[in-house]
Image 1 (cartoon, helix red, strand yellow):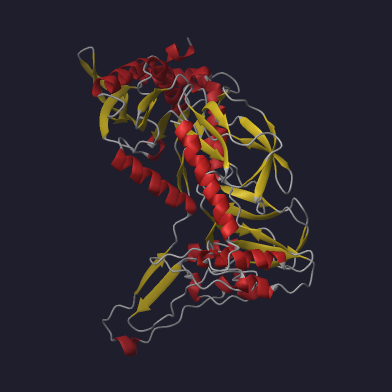
Image 2 (cartoon, rainbow, N blue to C red):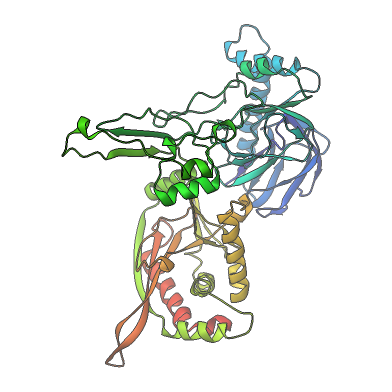
Length: 548
């Protein structure tokens, strides 16, 4: 099915782009991650990668031509696919967008008031002052959360300096400054979220008064709020001595004898203070900070004495415990996971096939393999390799569902589920069937490390054709998973359990492992899933075949 590729926003101030060079021509095959074109922005000429794969069917902007952000750039689809109607429709939409852009300057157009005002504000900025807005750091990003500021108001910023770490729906990414100057204003505090193009910061000459600019910036995409977890009012003007910000978590405490005011702000404490408080069971919201800007430090926690409760007030036999809860705003990653899994569970008709494999040979094989100097593989590496080889024999399980077709993938890219503090990410081992066990081990370790440090790129989490989820290391014997769409199946791997088994008519001590295959019934029939598991069983129970 054809996919429209629009002119991307490659910098925070980019409004239009010029195609400097096409690296692909109509009719060429395009793989995910291929460089499509070099785009000249207002900052630099940058390479633009494809997030899709297929055939380049149409080029909407020729080399040297300029068009606005989100205008038709290209169309990628299946070879020979008829896209005449799509070009016509998209072309009309682009023309309408251009017309709307022009109509924004019309005084009697009420919908244009916000954009006109912001345009006026930008054009009337003091000399050298630049508005930095929330960038679009991935192709699906609609809003971002400021995870950390690396600069504070009053700091000098050089072009290329990391301003902040921005949490998107795919990863937490560093955001570089394209300007030099002084950080005059912070529009979003740590933990706050806003849509793309909302005011993020203001940079300019030291001492410039920008309070009016920040106050009057009325981007329709400014900081998002939710009814379930209300965020505190965002500061309209960040003062030079304001280095801390409200958090979107809300904490409420009640007692039968005392009442603690509801705290809608983030608790600012040093890492050591937090560690000591956790060890001692101290609620940091009750601790008064003596550090800079009220920050809680080690001595504050060590010298903290809980307020005494009067027994005369509560009575001799009345409990004096307190109800305590904390509402934490959903991270961008958590929102994306919830959306994807909900869509998968309710759109794909899941069914499950459960098996139990004999792991005695796999255990002996791994011990022998790891006896080789500087070599170490895990059971998960064996499973990933076995799945990759089995998928080559059962392409139906290595498939994807589309409304008008089913795609059988000839390549095998296996997603490996990795637990992280914010939820779950699935980095991808590409061409897993062509890699050795040692290579798979090294790649999985590398990707898992990046995942836990929030350093995975969007490209490292895209393109999987099958997924493996392993909870065996947590002592889980058996479980089922939700399919990671657009995959057609996901394998859930349990723990290796030592138990009595029957071999050659005798009860002996053996080692087994339970696996569960979740399949999309639209693409994988029951018999097909069962045959795949039989092939997988042959590889895992006779792991020497993985080396053939």
